[in-house]
Image (cartoon, rainbow, N blue to C red; front, side, top):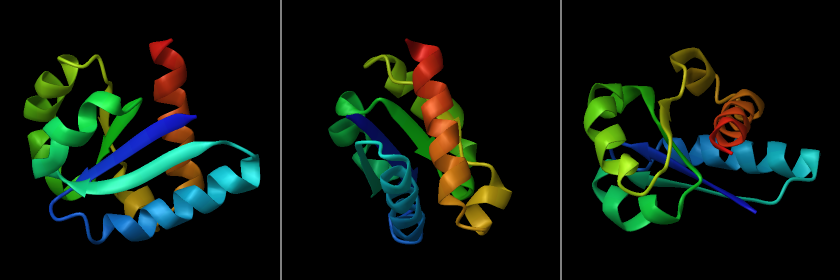
Length: 104
């Protein structure tokens, strides 16, 4: 089971993307725990994640979040704005899978 954490400003809009990603994972037969949280929850949810993806609205915090996530050896990336805007769960799930595979 892979654990994908999405961080955004408040954890609200990203929850729609989580649903699309969960649907994409189910269609592929993947076991995935995918959830969205506000950036302020990083220390609580980050250590158990396989990957952390940032909503484009907080991409300015990439350096700070990456430095924090390095403490728990979790890779971080920003969701491409087009995929976020289109709520493209398939592409964002594929991004998460690619990052997790590269980590191993």
